[in-house]
Amino acid sequence: MDGQPMVFLVLSAPLYGVSGVLYGRLASGGLHVVARPDFAVQYGSPDLATVLASQMIRRLSSFRVLTVDELLHLLEPAA
Image (cartoon, rainbow, N blue to C red):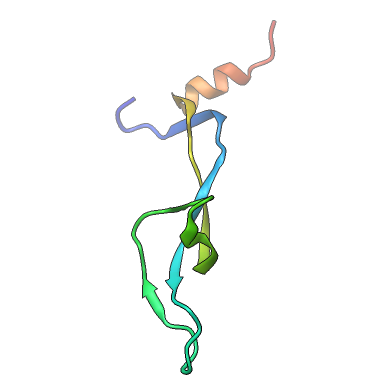
């Protein structure tokens, strides 16, 4: 597998959360950035309501790592 492109054949990839910027409450000067976390804010987190999301995050929980050749072999029609 060294030097070859890799493929993730994913069987389960549920939505996990978002990445973005956390804002504080509205003040006289408007909204203020509280944090720019370098981790995903999970769905269900109390912080989610104050995030301006830039990306949705999925969690790959069941997958196989294949080379492109292995994937093409799997996709060949049965003889």
